Image (cartoon, rainbow, N blue to C red; front, side, top):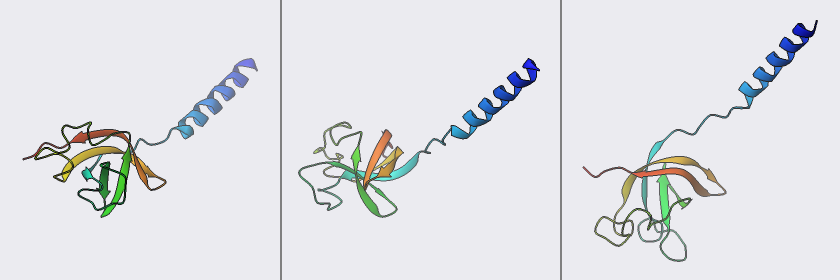
Length: 105
């Protein structure tokens, strides 16, 4: 009887933990640049932003200076770059967990 009870508890716990797992967000390619300089967003100075499906979001978790000189020829304040990102939009901001610039061709 104890074995049967133990198996029932183990089965229930396994089932519950499998249901609790959330899917990881998948990487997506977006446009990345300075929100004020390139995307025309309202803000207070240069701040990293991404454009997803035509809508721009400021980024939390990375900055314009985290990826080189923002004012260089290919920097975020002078160019729009492609980036592979993982994250989600929360309260109209993009919370990034991974941000990688796509090399220019």
